[in-house]
Length: 153
Image 1 (cartoon, rainbow, N blue to C red):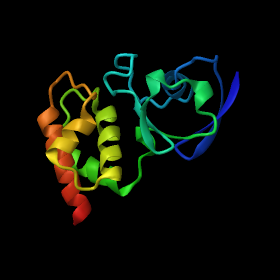
Image 2 (cartoon, helix red, strand yellow):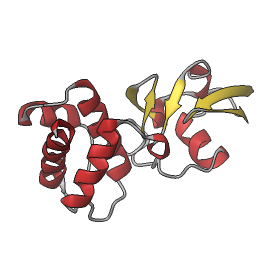
Image 3 (cartoon, helix red, strand yellow):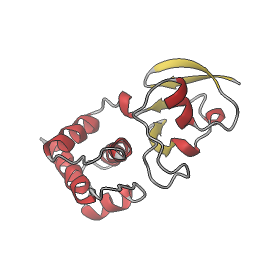
Image 4 (tube, rainbow, N blue to C red):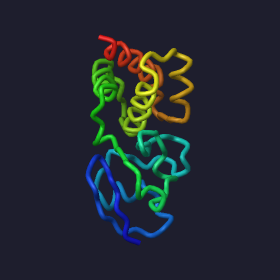
């Protein structure tokens, strides 16, 4: 099935079978490897992308459902919250192994795009469902707080 995707501001024509997860089209067809495969059942967050500005799990988002949507991967982040999150992640040395960090960053940017000054409880609630095998949760939380401060300045 031929489909046209708008990904990171560019239109791409891809050929994929119905039921193909968006994740595999992004990684295998379009060669954007920042979006990771984690669990395959939308439980870990490693595959998070934005679909029309909303964070979704690309491992459970099917190609036939996204043709008329704007898709953004970590490679396409350019917003003020994205810049603040990237700066905070670097300042606080959040990353350990790094595998989950694309999804963590995508979710953090999603949160700060909706709520520039979240409480700790709001951070925890929003980030719930993003798994980190290295348990960097406290650094992630601190980086989101720091990103919020950066956005205020």
